[in-house]
Length: 513
Picture (cartoon, rainbow, N blue to C red):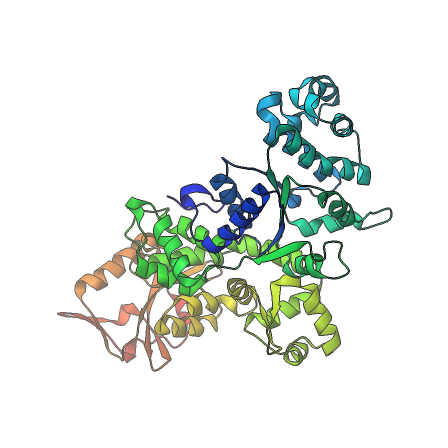
């Protein structure tokens, strides 16, 4: 197996989710008995909703078909989503009998009018369904929705098959009701779907609150029509197993390092897939330093893949609203009460509550009334990009000595980064300030420090090879002393003590250029 973060996963790479698959198996069982059901899957973005449906489809490919549509692929959203759903249903349920691709023909109306009526499927359909299929490319709006939504059931009856229609980001369909002339599609869906006997419906969405309101509110057209399944992040054991089992045989991530990784970035499967990809990109064996460098490059770097993902999430939630940005920043440090958030952003409690509601499922309200960011790693990213946030990677990844050194250097305007062993040589950290790069060896011992000649020679050689100035950060009882290696004494061993302390690091850097 191998890690995959850019596509949904099914087959050998799919792991865990046994209870969720059992729920979907029940949908298939009842459909087979002529009792189609509707299931709503609620889960955060990238938590594995699509992978779950694809794995369900793979396991049931012998006894039913799955027709899937992702509403988020339409930007801006139009009624065309229903046209594609109907064409895709024809391809999935009757493709072998037609010899054409209905979805591909949608962009060529003359070819559609010429080829579709000549198919065996068209001949099998009742007159009303034939008319709907024949006019599919030219219909629009609610008329299109009514015609298209009825076709999967008609095609399933004609082909004597059963199917599951899976619609991801289902809540986005609400946008069709917006603006002048907008029409709410959900009553149309309910009215058509409830007559179907050969199609079960599985909808999913990442806006949990909106989805839950949509399927459970008494004011919703779908009230009491859907059962609900929550798809959460993985448990710790399953998250560790994902990293261990997902790594290739010749680049294995061991269980101890996987457990440490889960402690650092959490159990969101998308985050873990990205981390796994980053780790196994280079040959093993993999150590703590490799994990630190991988997380630094993914999360705490401007062009890191997870950093860019979080930046898009930030833009989608905040836009240009400074009040929403301040609210997220207030929550980044941990859970807080409404009054504390209001005080932090300088707003009344009522207005602050409205800001929190506008942030949707990126924030979560606990039973004790406190609020927090739903994704802890997103919270760390927000802290990192805020003023003074350069120490966050060290706080998340580093030991006590590295954290203390990072705090001390950050007060001088340095940003601290972890890099892979091949990129940082013998040093623990790289500190950057403008165009200056400073390599740092951290030691948690009282002065004087002692090094073997081999250890010292390696640091000298790596600094020369990389073109870096370098220092030693001695940490003792949280007191950090930055030492000038040029003032070490070399006899049988290399020793460096108080006389090597640099009183003004910035001046020292300028003097040693």
